[in-house]
Length: 429
Ligand SMILES: [Fe+2]
Image 1 (spheres, helix red, strand yellow):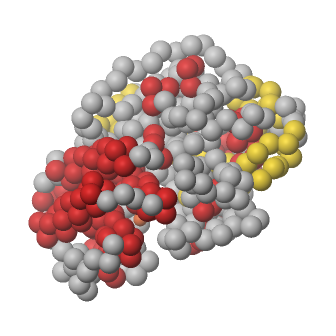
Image 2 (cartoon, rainbow, N blue to C red; image 1 turned 120 degrees about the horizontal axis):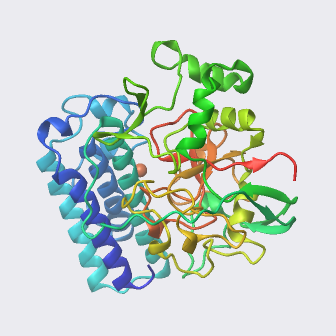
């Protein structure tokens, strides 16, 4: 996404996805009940349009505000989360769409008519990536609310088959590169990925596959949620915050009469696919599972080492270009493929589905790298430093154009609404 034509195509794509997520919701569905992990869809689209307007059209292009007095409504750090539900604060759908379409129209005109500088190219990529990030939050919002899954045009795809791959990959110790090099015209990254640096990693063994529903079910059946010694203090507090003061299973699991396990995918309950990776688990659940299984979570440097190798691959399979046919991303399969599928996306170490499927929990707190410099959007990273956990690799709901091995996503440890899962490491190598 470097030429004006590529940027224009990506803008069209993210716009098409965003609009399709709005267009198939009726008025009652748009009036979403308050929930901590989601936003009203109308606010979410107004917010992404504000990024284009504020950074590209106003700051760079000198345009006037299209909705005077609404900066504080569309800027997520000015409006409290709760106020996004206050009647009369967020405009109605038609007015928001008028703003959204007007801003994107002006953005397209700027892209078509004027040569763009390297700085502007960076800004275009930044706001389009931000747009994509909100597509993912709209998708986990649909899961939270029990709405239908999205139907993105051209997204149909056959579920790849099981390969029988299992066990651990051994990863050599050594000096690995972590993060991204300094910004240059053709290389985009976010502030939290910079500055790239070398990190020493001891030899370790990491599972080739993500933890599956079937593996996690054994932990549930063994009473793992009730074994206090498996949960540390944060995990025990999180359990106590569950419905009725406890939890006994993952967020979207349920048991039918007769004992059949099911899980809810969007608006449907389905029999639990045992061979598919588990999704929507907190890091507390991932760590309790690890203790039960005699395993541990990878650190972020270990995860990157297993994905990148010593030759600093940008993507697990090598090369500088994302290949969406090798991954479950872009809202196509939603983690329905077996954990041992997608051999074409394997890392050099032999790990499958490191890109896509689920954001993989690590044991690493989300903190800036030494020498961190804040980006143009001051709040992209800094508000999450310290109390969030690093997740890696993107999920089935992440846009494939957003991600690379060095990408860092951060979630609070108790989040289960996002598309999170995990793989484990051996305790002894
Ligand atoms: Fe945002």
